[in-house]
Amino acid sequence: MSTFPHDQFADALAANDEYIKSFKYSDLTGTAQKGLAIVTCMDSRINPLSVIGMRSGDAKILRNAGARVTDDVLRTLVLATYLLGVKRILIMPHTNCRMAQVDEAEIHREIDTKYGIDTSELEFKTVANQQAALIEDVQMVRNYRLLNTGVFVGGAIYDVATGKITPVDC
Ligand SMILES: [Zn+2]
Image (cartoon, rainbow, N blue to C red; front, top):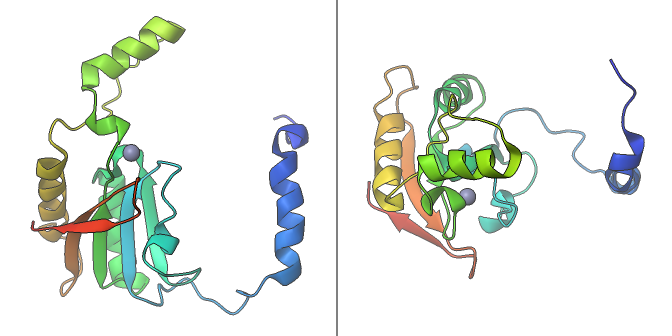
């Protein structure tokens, strides 16, 4: 065990001291008030709640590299749809995503070349065709036998240059 690295988090801790002064979400519960879950990429250009005009308490946010549907995403969505009020799921990858620009082997090679670490035991789930991968992921969630019934699942691509989301038929 080591002490918390205060210096490295000083800006975040100072900002939090300010944040709590006007904190107004004390009454919220863990239920998604707007009944929505968003699966999106970890990309730092995306502010999922702002994109769709929501705020704290409204939606569940699941993020990973490339907005891919993984076992852990399915596990979380099962809990969200039975226990946390989620009735609609939006899977939202984005334009200019690194995961859609290179293939699996290239990423492993780049890390190995730069850092000398072999990451080949991991599957990064890069996509060759973003739209096709989105359709596949939406259908995987929609058809998942353990998901609650009556849940709507949609796919849309977020444009990091304009902020616009474009729905995709899946
Ligand atoms: Zn991305």
